[in-house]
Image (cartoon, rainbow over all chains, first blue to last red; front, side, top):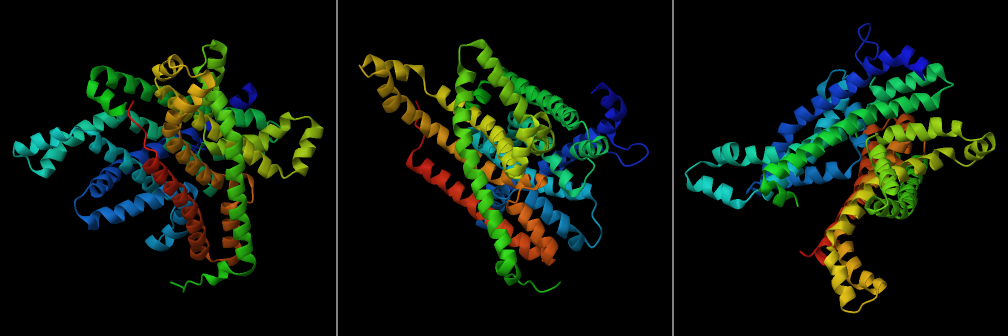
Length: 234
Length: 231
């Protein structure tokens, strides 16, 4: 195990970098973070459309959310892998393919989180803001969304954990992220699969468990300082 | 773009591959579900137990499994776990469809730790006074459970369990990485052999969606028929 870590430890963490493309754990974190950052505005937009008074906005988005939630992520990845090139007219790398699939998938999930957050907020907040003469847009921007975002912070960290776990599917389309790197090490070493897949599992565990505890601490803190959060999430 | 011809994948040999995959995905889901429910219940009870070692063990089980991607579980059980077995057991495994056996092990462990958390919060959501009140009225322990506690707990637990079932159905697709012949594996096989990507993935997506939407509909109907009551 020590010998394995000495030989392949750096490869696990950053892939062939700096002599080749970035890979390993660093690529996993980078992909997960990029996906979540890009999915966030999409999720807010989809949530606002789902809550819109106009049926023409509401229906397509509701259908999209149901379809995405009913389809395995792997299926979305295959669609992206085979059809992004013919859509965009140029070769799409594995990173871009995974990113596109994850942004769509996370966007649909975050839309539900944001929607629940907006619906969970006391109606009096919107009514008071509108009575004071604020427009719909200003009410959202200054009153509703800031409270929703603060309340959903723990869910957002949990979604990041889910996204990090989902990046492992990049293995299937040959993206050099952590799982792929571990499998390559395994096919070179051959005789230590238990140790290699054990190291792989431990790396994911350290990352995801740490973040889960962080989300839990955020939840506790929010419940302590804000009784309304406690009521909304009870 | 070329004309689409769905008959290529809805007839003959390709259709047969896809149907086989679909049936195996359904079987994987059913078998995993049946194995997960008792395991999850046991883990949930251990998490709520007053015996400290039981609580540590079950917490370790849940945290250890859900913080590792399902893909890694598949890789571990298929590529690493057989090496830990004595030779005779290993040969038995390879003679008995190792891809499916390992997929069921990985899926069962992964699913049961999520189900355990749902069952645990369901049990905790029924106030202890409900049991105490039933006992005071003269019900025995078993009939208080059956008539008072469980009907309330089920209303709370069934919707999240259905949502876990939906996740399980979608998660069976990841078993393709170890070569289990389920729907996603067969879809890739058909795509490679027929060069009909849109048709193959279109039909496969519809197959996944049909079962997913049926599960979602069941959850909606249940919540309409048996809404959780405020206690």
